[in-house]
Length: 266
Image (spheres, rainbow, N blue to C red):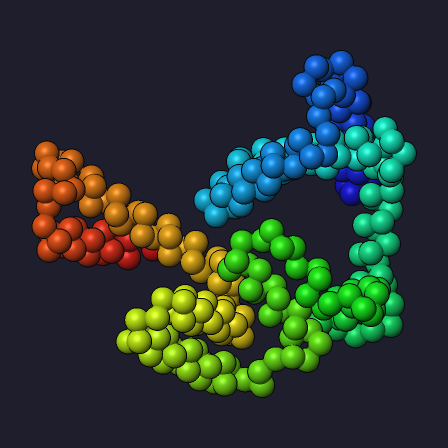
């Protein structure tokens, strides 16, 4: 059964490679593209995949994965034209990395939990890098701030720079909240921004400690807020009102209605 799948996958992959080659040779738009010109499109495709995953829309996930695969092949095709590297190099490098960083599968190391696997991965990655390079070097500067904070904390924790337990992290959250309140009372905007950032950073750290991805949690809340606010808009429309004509108490009443409806749907 697996051999049949590999055979079909191989045929489909070869067909796709031929199409990419033909487009690069014959299509005016494809011929003009460089790595720099399609970089922003790749970022857009990743965000579209993320959205499809959050919506649990398997049809869209399938489509967006195809778009990202196309970009991978396109980058490799462009690079091959200057002999920088080619698709085989990309695949071989990935295979070697996966084998090297999974010694519990391909070696003698034992790792029976996902946390141990992550620790081993980061340690092996550090050993592969120049010792002069910062532990945080592997965190892309272009990441959204929330995800960047989470990844930096993970990286630092992988070399032992971490709290001992969740209670300590929560106490740090409370400390940062108190400092923010003090800055607000002092009406020092520079200090307020700094302390607010410190509070967010400590909350991200607490989320990591209790096994929550803060970006996923915030996106879930965003979706919840959007759904409830749109319910208020719908009710205003049914009554022939503009939102600006509704009182805050009316909007709050519909907000709680939406909340109850969501509970029933869960």
